[in-house]
Length: 396
Image 1 (cartoon, rainbow, N blue to C red):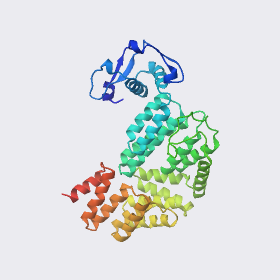
Image 2: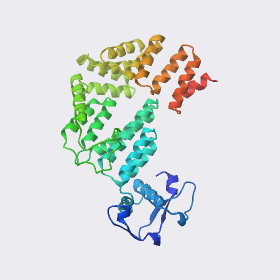
Image 3: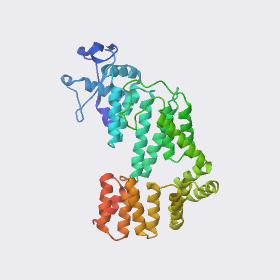
Image 4: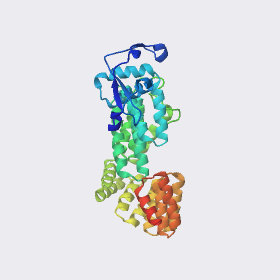
């Protein structure tokens, strides 16, 4: 817990009015006896330094207990507080899962993770709770990456990978965790790990079905059952086929990606050229080659590689955005605009693309249009430093 939150948790002796059993017909499915020897944690309202006992409510007690459970500050009492909460709120798993989904959809990832931390404390080994946490961390990392906040994104991707590792280690195994981890590694271009996860998702028997109330909302990316449905099985099989036919689990491909991501472009280029000698028709290889060349500012060579990637099937917003960067530097502005506008149609909220449209407008001398694009970027991502710098310069 953050320090200010710790300061808002006070421990009370059990009031006489709360002693005894809680009516399980009213509050839950099992009888629960309040232990007068264990103090009750209560969360004070923000700004309050003391508690008026006349204002004490069950919600204040539940909130205090949830914070203590999620932070594990009183491990000797955790099981007692856990049973207390579940007696009062037997449907809390479903309610909190829905709340976390809503917060994540609205971009409030920190609050979603706080809610999931409470659920993790209540259900420490429940697979959907652990998987939901990994999914939210992944979504947060992707949002940071889209906003151009690469360093922060990498930290969250690392946290997401660790969260996936936690759920993948469960026994019995949970096939949906392997399926979602496969997509995580696919996005990270770690095709060897993706292949391992998708293979495992199809081969493991799966844990028992999650209990009612644990699922996410229908149609949500956090929605899951214990076993893969036929659509997911087909998806996993198709991806495995693409990886194997394209040789994407080749060690040199992963080496190239890692080298370039770490700033060792020359070593990355050597690895990806080795890959392309064996797999000349795989667009992903040409994309990685172009990426490394672009980072070295070898604009013409990079452009040729990205165009090869597009020709071989890599027609996505990332490839077109990278192609446009090269075209801007080569001052082929009409072609650059065409690529960026096509990319934006496929990915309308991608701030990198919008920011590059602003850069293109600046290079063409249209400061008003450039400022408009950077204003859109700042509306979508207020902390974008590059857009803020350009916008301030255009309006100075």
